[in-house]
Length: 132
Image 1 (tube, rainbow, N blue to C red):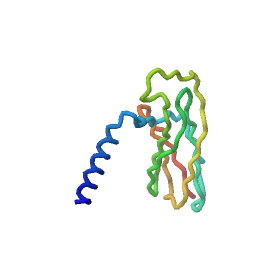
Image 2: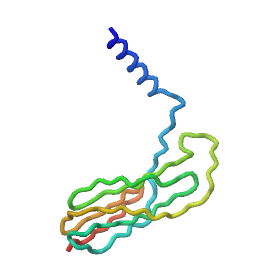
Image 3: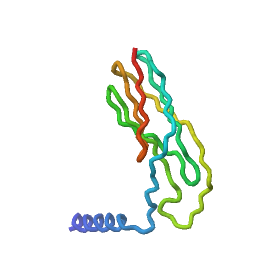
Image 4: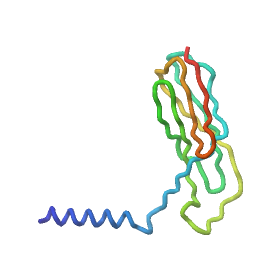
């Protein structure tokens, strides 16, 4: 009986937290990346560091770079936080800043390694690094 009541209490708590009007809203946004810097070539055992120039400002700040990688390529997305998202009456300063953020890949790589940065509605930035 105790296990049954505990199960009901957990289910009720889970349902209540899913509808909690005081819980913070998801403020995640895909940030605009204006530039992708990568070397033209690297040696086969070296690490590969790429630099993304990310647009932030107003109520938007950089959070992290999400990466999906295979042996021959990587897809990157720059994620940020929009402090005004989900709130009303928030005044954000009208400025844009461009911040460099780097990401380092460890070997192994195939003979060429393609890096793509997804930018939401804009076309992706793509570069290919030759591995020697």
